[in-house]
Image (cartoon, rainbow, N blue to C red; front, side):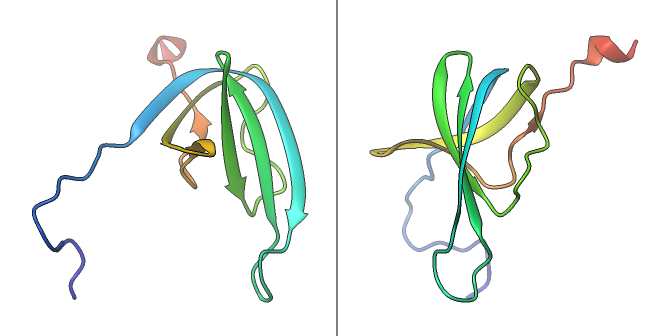
Length: 97
């Protein structure tokens, strides 16, 4: 089936977006989920007092404590999970004047 076609007329819930200062960062891992899969690292991020979980193959993140970050996430029973490859530094246009 071609991408973009969905069965039914259900509306997809929009992605939630968060933006703020990265206050804390903890890494767990590496974890081996199954044979042949690369090692996964789990990060616990605290952004403006809110806790988020992030899972990726990267041992180092492109952000550091104190950076202004932006990302998409979804809320689950297990907490708030950051979408893969959506974590990055927030660019303030006033810095480039």
